[in-house]
Length: 108
Image (cartoon, rainbow, N blue to C red; front, side, top):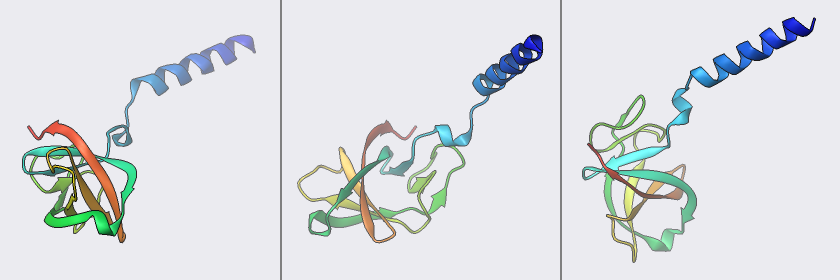
């Protein structure tokens, strides 16, 4: 009985550590050759600036082109945040809520 438990535990450990699901990637959007990580922070409507773009395509893992996202619905609008340079952070409108997205790095 002890050996069956040991084998089961070993199999559980090996299979759990050897696979990676698509959910392991951060939620990101791309705009102007830049990737932005979505955060849990929200932005109030009075701090929303001009619209910069919108999500046009869903990427399977990570975006490879501008206006793509891997976890944000197509049609979600991308906005400036007043007082913050768009090269540092933008706002993403999702279900009538503005979610802050911060700089991740260059798109390619």
